[in-house]
Length: 278
Image (cartoon, rainbow, N blue to C red; front, side):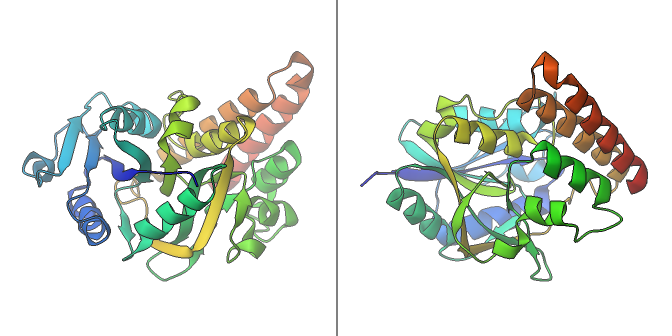
């Protein structure tokens, strides 16, 4: 049986004091005084982190390397004894026993690199956090039709909504909350830091799959994600960042010269979706 060893929490903050306190409190119900590393990407350092409990290590990055870059920095700061890492957005609240059950799932499946829980919002609605890696067909259909026909077959295939309650392997897991096997995470270089925001989790799941690892969705464990606490007033900027990251992923997945027309078509579809979103 594969051993996972000790577990630590890593997260990224950006004007996130209130959310951080809730996250750390819920972490302590699961792992009392367990190790926490927070990378603060805000230009002004967090007041709460300046006086945080001793278990919380703060890394201040006013240069803001983005989500993936900050998580990589947090993982690098962990002691060697940590073998499994819970990656969370700061605005996540962990349910009692959730960390232990995620660790058990990782321990019981030696081929699994990442385990993701069912993520719900404040109303209890399930977010599609375990999805297929977007192919050209699914990506174009989802990009063009999501806003005008939300239940179209391409969006449904991408979100895998029909399988929200079934434990299963998947293409990728939401970076809002997932437990990773450190050895697997580091073997592929962690998050690709060229993704400033969005799609770094899609890319991570895709590269783990290419390396022979499994991404596993475990809906028997649930967490609450309030979402976008620090960016809800920057919707246009965030939408633009999302589409740029999507185009980067498509270029990475389909890099060959003879795939250029396909990349161009997907870029057109993403630009069309951005205009529809406005």
